[in-house]
Length: 79
Image (cartoon, rainbow, N blue to C red; front, side, top):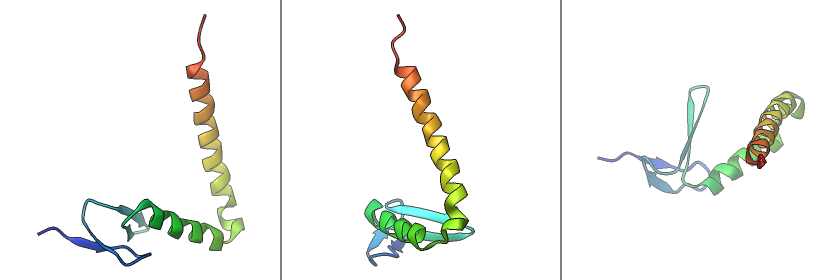
């Protein structure tokens, strides 16, 4: 039998293997769609203490800036 999960944002039931599962410190959070996951994570970020997450956000932004820079360099034509 296929296990069912319940979206913590909208309450919709969905089968295992679909949706999004987020594991944080041993707790699992299930979302039936990316929209529900986005709504939840957006609220977490806006509610969290900005001093607590600002360094993490800067590190992640730096990581993606580096990836973007590498992609741009790789896509340049060499003559």
